[in-house]
Amino acid sequence: MPTNNLDPEDEVICLCSGTTQSDIARWFAQGLDMDAISRKTGAVSGCAGCEWDVSEMLRILAEQKAAADNV
Image 1 (cartoon, helix red, strand yellow):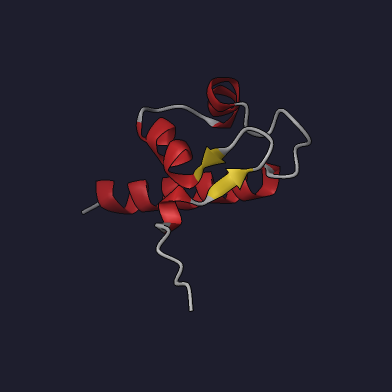
Image 2 (spheres, rainbow, N blue to C red):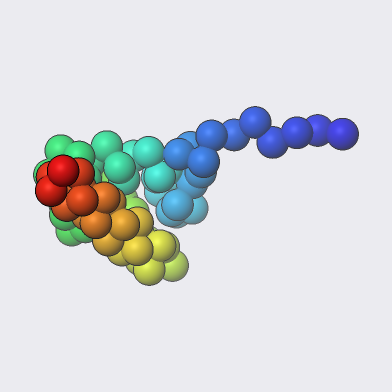
C-alpha cells in the first residue's frame, strides 16, 4: 500500500499557480501581505478559489507571529 510522504508544507494551496503552503509562509515571513504574495506567486489571481485558504493561512501565521513576539 503506498504511503503519503508529502510534507504538509509542500501541499499546494493554489492549483492555478502551484503555490504551496511553504511558499505562502516564506513570503509572509518576509513581510508580504496577501496582495503582495498574490503578485509574487500568482495565488488568488486565477480563479480565486484559494482566496479563503490563503487568507486563513495568513491569519494563522499572523497569530503565531504575534504570540511569538509576546514571549
